[in-house]
Image (tube, rainbow, N blue to C red):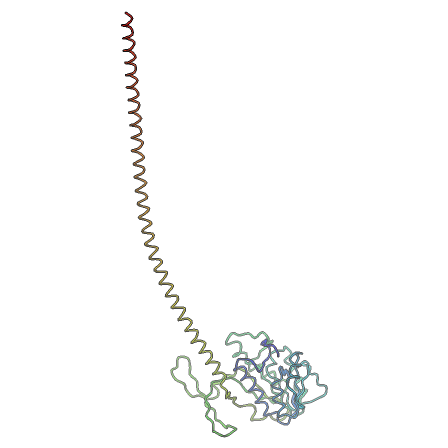
Length: 352
């Protein structure tokens, strides 16, 4: 299976809008391919060439990427379908000519746009048709500020028209855009012949208002070009209806994800509230502990003062005791000396 790298469309891509755009182009051009010999330039994964081969007399897909060309040849097998690897500005088909040349979403990928158009004109039989699409630069890139890294040169309507008219005498232009659609259809009938009504609501406007088709702005341009006398009037104008509602399924899945995300967010917010409550309780406890610590520090300071006072008293008592000891010692000394003196006196009188 080919890897999704963004360079080419793959039918299994998840984005339904991209699927609508690509599938609609090929289905619309199939109306012009009936019974014709078709060349599909930049055939990519091969799904479009395979679709055309169900109604065309033969289809040749040309793809420059080796892996894509091999994938297409292996995946889509039909006696009326062939894939070749090669350049879309120098198509390796020898002297073959085709009734219809198709080139969808490849023009903007090459710098040799003049050469591509000239090659398409060369490969067509007289009166053959060239159907080509490309993004509207103003809507695709400039308005959203988007840059596709695989696009070499995008065009506005004037540039696209002028390019084609340098190589073809007849050019009929179409636009393509995926819009929301409400469908009213006859039941039991395989083909719808529907009218088109256009509504729009301007920013700040409270209601939708009916308008005409000029309100529609194309995201992509599609052209039918020819060097023959005329280009088919019916052309490519059509609607593609997704009966499986994949776009709505994507929206429903997204809405479900949003609901789950909101539940998760609510649970996290409840956890935050709980944590904040615990933090407040801890803060209150810390305040109490700080007050208790302040009381203990005050008591300790008072105790230190008491100790200092007691130390002072002890020093005074020590000094007093020392003085008293000195006085007592001195008195004892005096008594001893007095006793000695008396003893000497007595001894003296005894000798007389």
